[in-house]
Length: 278
Image 1: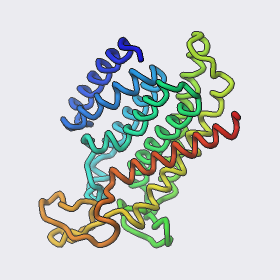
Image 2 (image 1 turned 180 degrees about the vertical axis):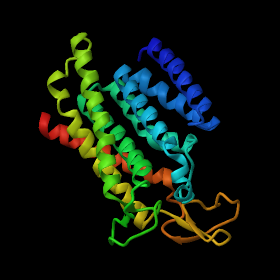
Image 3 (image 1 turned 180 degrees about the horizontal axis):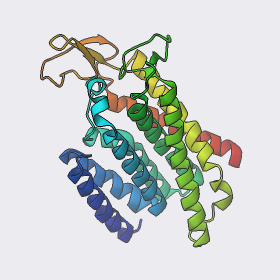
Image 4 (image 1 turned 90 degrees about the vertical axis):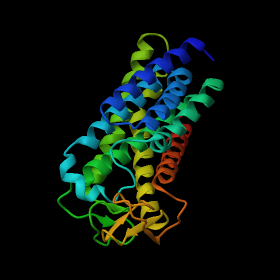
């Protein structure tokens, strides 16, 4: 464990957290979560890991504000808004931080492959949500194909699917570019493996984002606000009124769904890497 790297990780993640708070991409608790996750990923994983985390944060934060007014009505269904709190930060980056801890003690490339899958999943899911909700074609429930309202948990669109692939591919392409750059600087020697990262990111990201939709359509807790006559992922609607559970498990909220999806994405990517490399 390198203390200098940890200190650098604290400083960089604090700066990014402050920027996110200023841009209203993070709440105060979200800043704390970003510092915790960023410190572990930067400090223990290294600069390549950290830059992949930044790639996710910047692209997802920008898309959260892209055509925000057009998303307003459908976004009422979501558990949380575009300003991420500590729960969302840990749901999206917590598993990556755990992998960084494991990698620091056992620097096996398979753990980095898992990290690429995790980051590919959370980026794919965010891109699918933020762009899919703008689709002119109404979404269909992933389980039955039934047409549902935009923003409904478990609803998928063709635009959302392509967006998820693009989001994962961005992470994979960045991983390849960064590892190749590190190889040229003689600080890493994974250049032959690097060409596989886009495939790992897309495979893991697509599997994870689809799993997220499947959980949303089946077992995620979904509520109904009698006051607003609207469905939501929140036990307390944005209007402040208590909602009633209409389907799913009460304890399975959106953050746990996101974490579960990232876990599957990481497993798919690491398994594929293990099969190809070994």
